[in-house]
Every structure is written in structure tokens, then in C-alpha cells.
Length: 189
Image (tube, rainbow, N blue to C red):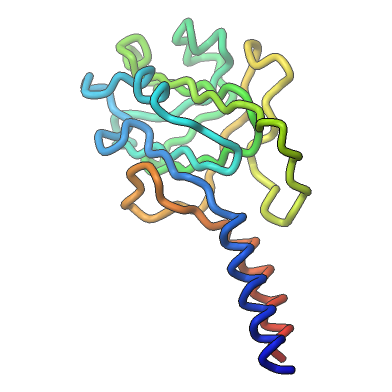
């Protein structure tokens, strides 16, 4: 009977890990978020397939750059005075919790105009049903508005994944794993 409990807990825990993963995308890949002209962020974003559950990671020198979440209008006009939120740590991980457009620019004068801006497009999931709410479904990013052309959701910071996050690192929701680990331990006792 104890073996059955152990196996049940193990399969449950492994299943949770598989469901809790998403891809970590480092904006600009190894070049990061910068204004030196080494990255065409429009091309970079167009080569990615973003999904709900993924993480967008901005790595940059906080003395020279920042990350501003802006509306579509501010994105196209490079208007850094009308922003939704600003993050400035230099190592910012933002979870994607809803489909829509996420418009980011650098608010340092001249940087956006020189191309330091990125439109993260997250499509609606295909005809598969949406997952039910779970402890990991909370995010500091509210859903995008129904009209993503008018505004975007505010940004937030998530726990930072490892530094080696080229484009396909698995990200595990610490809160969800801890919750399920407690359940699994309960099975073992």
C-alpha cells in the first residue's frame, strides 16, 4: 500500500512539472536589450512563437536602458511619457498570462526611435479548452484589454530563471510546485 502511495505521489508531481512549464525568451537572445544596433527586435519577435505560460526576459544595463510597457499608440510614436509601467532592474522576467499584444520600448531618449522596441504577440490558444484556474494562474500582469490597439497590460517581475536562458529553458512555477509538493508529501505520510 505504501508503494502505491509513493508511486501516486511521484506521478502526480511529475505531471504537475510537465504542465507548469513554458519557454523563456530572452529578448534579443544573447545580445539582450540594448541600443547598439546589433538586434532588430521586430525580426527577433517575428521568429518566436509566444504562448500563454511563457516568460519574456529583458537583460540589459540598467544605467543605460529600461523597459517600458506602453500602449500600441505610444509604441508606434515612441512616446515614453505615456507608459503603463516601467521596470529597471536590468534582469526582468515577465510572465505571459493572457493572449494579446505586449508593447515594450526603452524610454531613454532616442533609443526607441533607433529601434529599441518590441511587440510581443501572443495568439489566442487554438480550439483546445482553456486550463482551469490554479495557484500558479495568478500574475502581476492583468489581461490585455479587448482592444489591444488602445492599451497593454502592466508589467511585473517574476522569479528570475537561470542566466542560461537562450530560448527554450523550462520555467517552473515555484508556487505551484511547492503546493503540489506539500500534497505529495501528505501522500507519503
